[in-house]
Length: 99
Image 1 (spheres, rainbow, N blue to C red):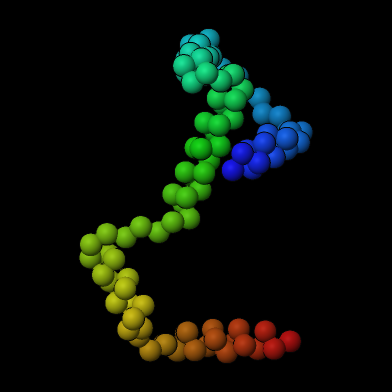
Image 2 (cartoon, rainbow, N blue to C red):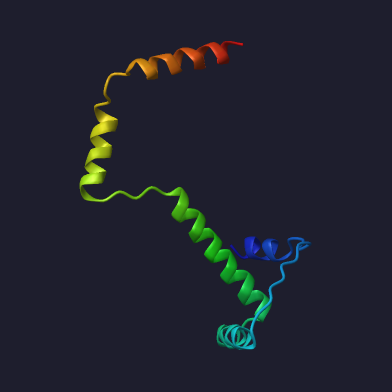
């Protein structure tokens, strides 16, 4: 575990990120960084990385509740027969993939 953290900190950091802030925003971020015992840069990068990961997860993860979940599971377990449009699409797909 310590090796992974050390290895990560040695990663080459060639990219820059700039932002314009109000004095109040800068003071707020600086205060939060100080409370965490980190630099403003470390705090901003860690916070942005966490927010980015959560945003990506929110958009990539499908969460269903109650009746929506039940409907989804039933559709997976008991799919309806393909209609004419689906059969036609499958034929086109097979034809393109055979090339």
